[in-house]
Amino acid sequence: MPRPKTHDDALRVRLLDRAGELLSTEGPGALSLRRLAADVNTSTTAVYSLFGGKPALLDALYEEAFRRFGDRLAALPKTDDPVEDIVQIGLTYRASALADPQFYLVMFSKVIPNFEPSEVTNAAAADTFVPLVEDVARAIESGLFVDAPREQIALAMWGMVHGLVSLELNGNLPPGVAIAPTYERAIRAHAEGWRRR
Image 1 (cartoon, helix red, strand yellow):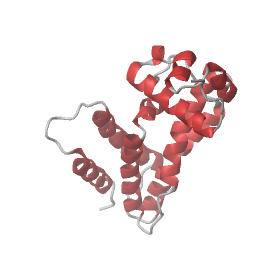
Image 2 (image 1 turned 45 degrees about the vertical axis):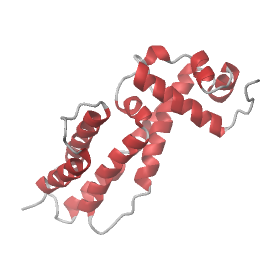
Image 3 (image 1 turned 120 degrees about the vertical axis):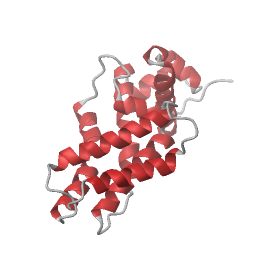
Image 4 (image 1 turned 180 degrees about the horizontal axis):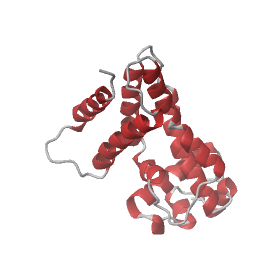
């Protein structure tokens, strides 16, 4: 049976998903354009047609990972309670990682040695930090959080959720610990630690 010749967005997404899976489970040596094409039942010509080559594929993979994460963040409603909004960002961080685990390693590690995303893609990645910084700023300005640099508080919050999610995705949790309630409680406790007394 001949391979499909449709080089559409659906094929692009399948290629990016599979590329993320290969990188996150088998490492950079597993990602060849020939194998990627075979794994999604298309041709290397299709991969070149959609991405122009491996460097552009990697950049598109990085961009897609942060786009999906950014879309989930953008879907969160803003409320009058910035502290609760921060908690919801933390919960969305985990939900996004669980929905697209194949992208998590791509987003937050140097899985591809010497690969540097484009300036545009790096800017898109940096944009996903902005909602947290903005909500922290709202919490400081409304007197709910201590008067500290907003980026410092946001980084501490991000580091805490990143650590827990990384433990979960890598299978490093202690046996018998239910992560979902532990995770939410940790976010809430961390947010409470920044409250003005």
